[in-house]
Amino acid sequence: MIDFMIKRNIEPILKTLATQYPVVTITGPRQSGKTTLCRHAFPHKKYVNLESLDTRQFATDDPRGFLAGYPDGAILDEIQRTPHLLSYIQAIVDEHQIPGMFILTGSQQFEVLNTINQSLAGRTALLKLLPLSISELKDSHPITSIDKFILTGFYPRIYDHDLNPTLAMGDYFETYVERDIRQLIAIKDLAIFEKFVKLCAGRIGQILNLQSLANDVGISHTTARTWITLLEASYIIFILRPWFRNFSKRLIKSPKLYFYDVGLASYLLGLENELHVSRDPLRGNLFENLAVMETLKFRFNQGKRSNLNFYRDSKGNEVDLLIEVGPDIFPVEIKMGATVTPDYFKGIKSFTKVVPDLPWGSGLIYGGNEVQSRSGVNVYPVWDISKMLELLDGKAG
Image (cartoon, rainbow, N blue to C red; front, side, top):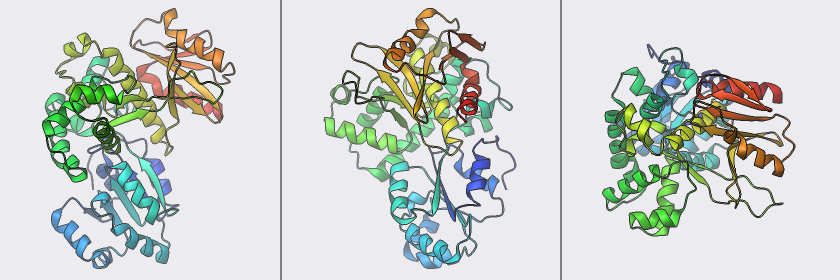
């Protein structure tokens, strides 16, 4: 039993799905809190860590004997380490038809989901757990400084143990590079890969130009694409796709690059304190990253898939975030400044010429403290993103 944990918004969804499906699978970054959440939500269910070499060897050599040791099911942590188990789990759940029999976790979304799609299609619910959200932190760890949020990021362990975020992120990155990456792909020179990831951080919130990135690192375009896919699969970077409709060929088709955790991006940029953040030329991009991820966390914590895009045309008109609301769009601008100015609404005004019908209005996330309404635009502080999204959900029904 876990004695203490920050309450996770996804837990009610997890428990509900465990009454409806024989298997629930939770993926997410390393140390996002998957294990703690599962053990807290299902304290009487046996827990198995497949990272343990002896356990994994048993599961590999004798999968039937291994699973026979858990007749009532179990929490199987880091299932991507033993993907062959899924075929045997399929047979068990088909025979017993018991809801919530197995709870699976994994840290690599593409590898886990591809295997699950083959073995457990229709038998498992899929959830994604990202690091903590602002709304989850508000009660136990209130932080009033945006720069501190950007520097610290949202990994639970940093808050649970009051860790220095720079040191914690350094350890996290080294462990990730040395262990997880080498499990997925052979990288001859880790220093070049590290340079690649740091240069990705330098392009945060920007249009992804793979050829430029490859040239700056000194690798091929193919290698750059492979590494981007790998980082995306491992929940390090998030690729935000552009929105476009067939009626316009003048829209940008390349995606934008973000990090699942803004604290990791700050570490990779060499930021070690709040003063560094406040002076960094990418401060606005880091703020945008924070806001995009908070929006994505809200969605995932409801058990839903991403419904996010961005808009940019060939003339440079841009809206940072487009949220799909059924067949409709809710455009959101993200601005670091604490004072709302008319320039903040330029992107939305341009977008209304392309999509004039916005039944749910539009939004602005900014670095101030007041909720406002400006010419039909709902203005919210970054602290209150969840309130804006809850209101949008309520209106959309």
